[in-house]
Image (cartoon, rainbow, N blue to C red; front, side, top):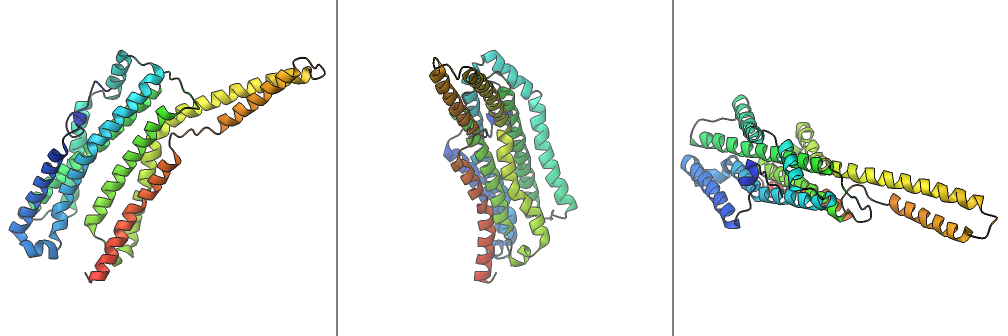
Length: 332
């Protein structure tokens, strides 16, 4: 277990009662709702679409607060699964945490600042800031949302670095029992799904219509986004893949050497009945062992995990198509 927690893990990533997260979310939405009614009135809030700009950032904050504890939990599960493979001591673990999270308080605050600065500059130079109560509210909540989002991304990167460093320790890899590594595959899937959820949320509040779908820029911007979950999925697993692949190559090399030795001995004594049968059985066993090794999957995921990943990528597509169809049906 990580005994040197980041600020993210101590705050947003900390497990909390469901009602606490719900109350925070309700507070943000009620505040946005009140601002919208005060400045635009209840009818215009929805008919003119002001609710989208007011609710998107509270939704992002609420979403991150929902998934952050799970991200921390998955990180701890990965660490707990790897520790027994190398018999790592508390001193070794503490050193890994300190090396991979050096100057982490400063860097965490920098990551928050980068997110805040980027969204403010984007809104200022993109003409997204409006005068009035709504404009001020949107600016402040956007800064908070993107600061937290940037912070979450940084925390995820640190988590991957910790896992990669742990995997560099001497580990005992049983190629025929990779259950301990499959937790990395599940963690990678959750990271990818977290991104897909956020992307879907953004598309929901964007509310594209049919004319937008005919715009080349829309696809140039959003199509690469569908590839990011796949990149996240395999990037998070890559250090584990290297460990398993290295162990597999070493085992195949050793098996190949033994097959050549036994084959040579069998051929040399082929005219002698004594021991030939045992050598033949040994050779068959080694060949079967080599074939079994070749079938070992070096990426620690199951077929169902990969199916879930690619199936979930369709969710943003369904969201866009569903909104466009609904808008055309209602004549909006």
